[in-house]
Length: 105
Image (cartoon, rainbow, N blue to C red):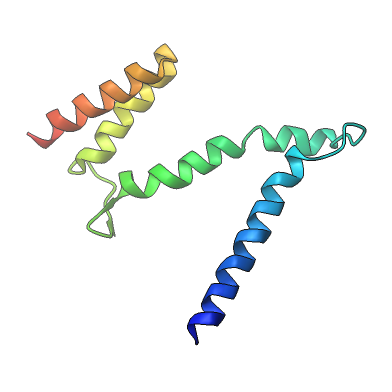
């Protein structure tokens, strides 16, 4: 595959991604999204964040490890409990970092 082909593919994917993301922001005011789609869009941020952080919690050296010997998973559990209880982003991050440090000892 040539370098030109790679650049064309990357630019094409960029244009497609940008147009898909911008389509919801640039809709004319008279266009109303169906209620089912509006409800589904509320869950997109949670799904994206889960897709980002779950591999970090579950994988140790590229191998799934769901056990009490995985300090990142334990610290993530602490952070989730703090987030559910207090609904404070700073406290959630701080508790997760402290828990990770303590579980690594």
